[in-house]
View 1 (cartoon, rainbow, N blue to C red):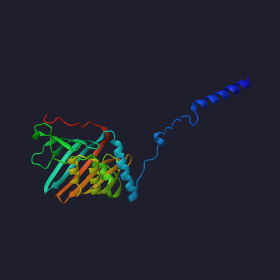
View 2: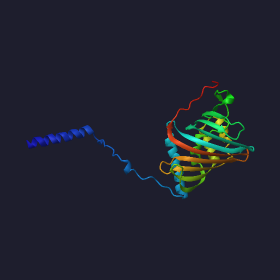
View 3: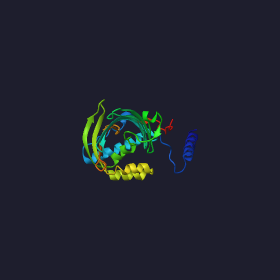
View 4: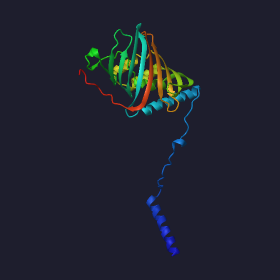
Amino acid sequence: MRGLKLFVAGFIAILLLTVVGCGETEPVTPATVSVDQAPPTRTYSTSPESTSELLRDASQAVGAATADNKGVQFNLQSTGSVEGDAEGSRSVGDMIFPDRVQMVTREYLTPQPVSTDVIVIGGQTYIRSESTGGNWIAGVSPSTPPDPQLITGYLDFARSSRNFGQETLVGGRKTYHVQVDVDMPLLVASLIKNNPDPAMQARYKGMEADVVTVDYWIDANNRLPYQMLVKSLNQNQRENLEQNFNFSNWGETVAIAKPCENC
């Protein structure tokens, strides 16, 4: 009887080896890691090397949050002047990366401020306001719509940068305050290379002479920017612009579609 048991055990072992196959290994169930066991949140110093790593990680975080047509909500206050004429507007809306924006904007330095609905798709701008009879038309927005690609573009093409350390925003969000000087010729060359649309290329080309400084407030945990201040100056066109962004709901699902024109 004992010999029979040994024979059966040996037969089962040979059978298992035959099922697994020569040169193959048995499947291994991956170990699960609880939230408590996850690696601690990375911290960054104010050194140039650590600041460069923070900018890189922030760019990657934005890319991950906005993949698969995901977007972000924004509030934007713009002030500036063109050829000596002062401009100012407030806007609220959504972005879908890389090139879709919908917002409602209102100029507040004009004698009779009016609200304008704006949709941008692939560089084409559509507006709707009282002056258009309440219809959508292809036109020019009264305030410059934000370009989603510039959020990571400013991060990726920093000529120099400085980290002012951690700051807490309203609501208790802990952030790193980082300021970058943007290498605009390199950024513009990259944007033109990746966008074949002639209208967008012309717009980007006009930015090449801009002197741009950007302040980011980057979340200390998820590395996403929740506030951004862009200051740009173009002496050739006598144009200066300051844009103050507040971002929320990174990774939101929102649809931005081409509107029905003249209807």
